[in-house]
Length: 305
Image (cartoon, rainbow, N blue to C red; front, side):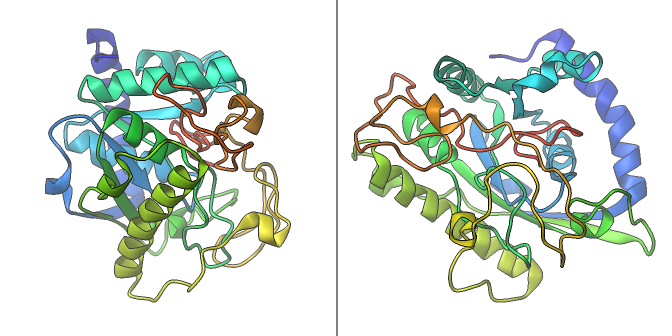
């Protein structure tokens, strides 16, 4: 899926509106932008606030890499937002096998055309009380192993102070700084000749999450938890409201564009990264397109919740 004159023009207009606002809201510091591949790639950031897609999208657009997010299919039906999503060539994600497969195919087309796909491996805002990356979903790993596209890990920190997780208003004073640290592409070569079964996808996802967590630890100057937060181990739903107060602010709906587990044919890992009965997913594109959630209901971007 190549950029069109219409999509480029729409990006220019939106950037002309969004960039001044983001620059007004916070300072920015981006490190490692030279590590972005010249060709197509999968960006895999951490996810701690609803404005993450704007922050990451801002950085990528400034590097002349228009961002493509996997977005909740329902958003494309909204009167104004839907038109913008279509015009900027974002990718709808539906909770069905056919819809999930189509999303994966379109994402592959974007990567093959040299574009940047943004997938939040956590699938939604982190449930970790201290905003460390939680257990990841398998979509980024699946797309990377199917296409050979590099996965570029990213960590950002600071935007959560401007708009805390599940907050209802911005906190712009005192002025904050949003920092993004980009790492080297994740080495997934050990998985290249393995079948795309549950074990392979989960192991590759852990490698991706380790890279993201290490970058965030560098930004924060702190040691991450010894064990990654697993929502299921804490009786937390993958979707909907998350009740916790702390770094993240007040609870509120999070929303999700992640295809349901039923979107993956049996014998393959489902979109959530929780596999159905063991088996293999072939390069036919069977199974989830991202294993991640798409953008929050309020902002353009995948994964954002």
